[in-house]
Length: 160
Image (cartoon, rainbow, N blue to C red; front, top):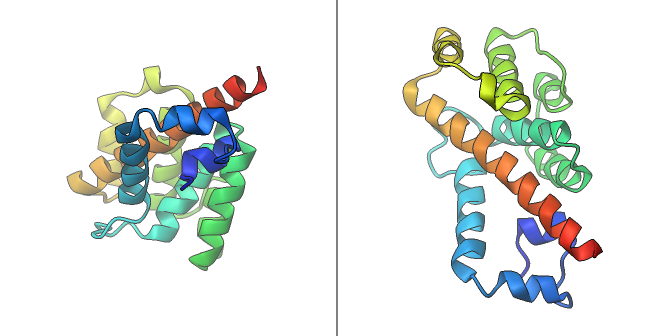
């Protein structure tokens, strides 16, 4: 069965690289379980699936990953997001203070992680996020950036 990383990399069961990934099933299964837990957790901690998918789409676009952008677009459409979340997903800076703080933090950690500081966390707290929400946001940002890099590496390996 293909997973989200296979789909993002364009792998099918006919590809040798697909089977090579399955030599380490714990990594394939673990990545899929992580994806589910950060995008569609049982307890969203007040961070809706639509918000999470909008941020994931934003991260995929920042990483210039067209396959993941398309995948997140499709998932986000199923959530029937409002205009503010669509703007967030599209890379715009929202007028809403909380969404703007989420966008700023997501962009910083995605584009210039070495510049992230403790003061960035304070800005999230000031915007109204709790510590569990900040941890959930951090997990989401980390996973989607991981996913884009793995998919890019697999695409590169497929091209040789």
